[in-house]
Image 1 (cartoon, rainbow, N blue to C red):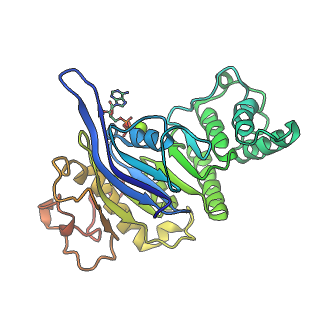
Image 2: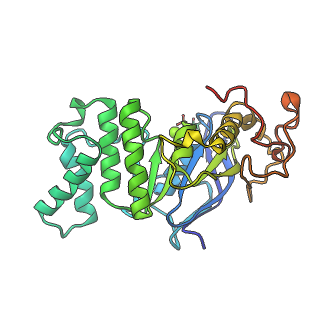
Image 3: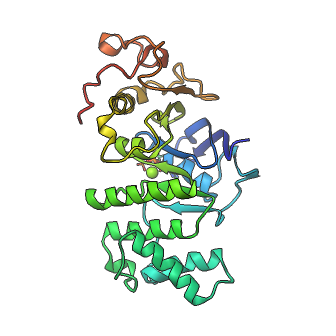
Length: 308
Ligand SMILES: Nc1ncnc2c1ncn2[C@@H]1O[C@H](COP(=O)(O)OP(=O)(O)OP(=O)(O)O)[C@@H](O)[C@H]1O
Ligand SMILES: [Mg+2]
């Protein structure tokens, strides 16, 4: 049994004129120590899936099982970084993090909690801002407090909802490197939402491609075939990087909408693709005919938008 198993997950929200099914029949798994990213257009239901995995929202049907137990509510076994930072506005940076750490290890004394929190505050570059309240912080700083808080409880699984969205490129790069280092050192299991295909290629072992909603599904799973010791500084020297990148960009630009009616995808067992390495796949015909059919795609073709 994989560490996390998601089976036949469906979410419908009540709406005027009847319920809207955001996604249906979502199936995927995450192995222990695996880093999985999900990409898809705004509104397709990524955050809703993450909320179900966090235990903060209930699926309409289907199950998510982590480490042998069905996820039925929030738990300190899962650390969440929210798309909005979700800090307690009346608490300082240190206290926002300490609150979570105290809940996780109730028998720790004050000094131990403080030292532990400080390590993660330093890690995200907030040294000196310990006493500040969220209202005194920039958007990126608030996001970094959220990241420090999630890391500090050393959860079995990290759930990250666009955690670097509000950061400038420099800070983003530094924290991505740090996340990569922590994940490699601790074999942390991670589920992360991102809009940034380069971030997904840098961090993920596999990338779930989610089609547009409503009735969104996991259309395909891209196996990241770049060597695991890749870095932000060298991965673009590898020709394989462009094949994976083109494939992801193509999905977002063109193919994500073609799965709307189900297409040829098999949501019960999404196709696993290895762009550029699945030599058996024929080249994409000119004009992109049959783009909804993954068997007609290879990431070897040049995406018009790959330089975006
Ligand atoms: N509480 C709710 N009630 C009704 N509809 C909701 C609710 N929460 C989310 N939705 C709808 O569900 C869909 C998916 O929302 P979700 O936040 O999961 O999208 P997302 O993929 O995370 O988008 P983004 O990339 O913009 O963050 C949207 O169409 C949204 O309007
Ligand atoms: Mg979202």
